[in-house]
Image (tube, rainbow, N blue to C red; front, side, top):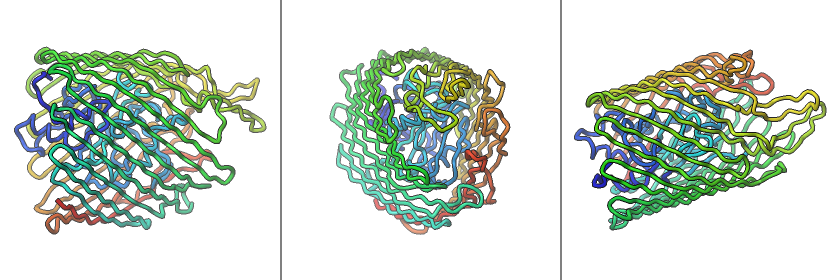
Length: 622
């Protein structure tokens, strides 16, 4: 990107660690292409999660999937994980439907080896290590970027399998708000409202949703387990005369979810402020301040518990441009605090990091180099790096190769869980744990044409020091240890078509995640997945459907407890029946397929809800 190449301010606020990016990136895509949005190939779409700055998917040299606003609106999903299910390299595991525990495995890595960003703010539980996917209201999300492959050299700990970033609704000038009401089976009800206002350089928006459901059984033959969620997003953006921008975003989601044996009150909150400004024609600087909370209070049959995580971070990025080359240099500070009914030996830890990324362009060849050093007071220093090469064979075809190192940090549970005696055995954390470390290699090729695209990726990942629970026979104590190694190999093929009134996206992925010591497949990972989305516009109607399929998986490390594969069909239709008025009907799991992706401790399957239907009516005022 040259110094004279001007991108919209909304895109510039969406650098890899950004607070904000909405569907406005599509405006910049249109500015770079002479065709209407519907015919812009996917590989020309601008993304910001894979690198320290906005690039098209082809330029990013990563395996990337972007789910855009119109696709999300068309699919009208009930939960965020419905968008992720079946996407290349993504495996979703749930303990039931309607706000129940959800894990996301990227390229066969652990559920806490994927970094989740919400408007650029990292959100996760420092105690369990996983992100609260089930509590993020998809109704407030207008765009999702999925970057597969290691990104620790940009994001630090846990970006082993990849990074997923969700961007909340950011109404553009001319769109003043909307009201939507929906109802469906399982006594599901939803109300979604939004208002927005803008002046010449400032815009403000408030968006909210309330939804509740009686839910469905989470185990076969069980009682319905309900879910309630109230959430909102507030956004303030101001553009300066010199091309800089200040942006502030606040999201909060709170409610209650029931499970067999109890229920959980939850609250997640992200706050972010970003100031982006040009210091000269060749130097741009950005400062981000962020805070994330994940608070859960559980009321169970045997005991009650509270686990609250607070993460604060500050990040400073500087982008220096010389002709078509860019150099990014930055620093990051992060502090994590835990308040819990469990008495951890330590309840806080801090991390400091320096990082850099060099993006070089030599005609048809691109080179990207990245390096990061992290220093954590709990588990020490870790250095990660990456190298990626891309070459355009001609205007439509491109090949790429990359290497990246990454690491997964031990959680507070891994390190500091206090010694507990359970009669015949005991459990304790291990403060001497080292982070898991991984090296990944990838080869890719892609084709981008006027109305369609395809992308192929082959990869291998070698992971050392896997953290697993081990039982010490002399002391009868169970504790996490660095004991194993894993090798993950896979292939992903995706493609899409946007022409006339048709939009088609398809993908298939094969993954082989193996424990090197036992040659067993890692638990809860499927080896095959596929997804097909087809939509067609007919006058003021739109009809479509999605098919998602997974192969079998094992729920245990010994590969004795096999869970069958499954496939589901979703259908949808929408009708714009008057100016600014529309209605939409979606039916998920049309054939009422019974399936499970996980088992309980007693061997009982966690089951999905089955067929669900939702009818909505929406009014947009402009």
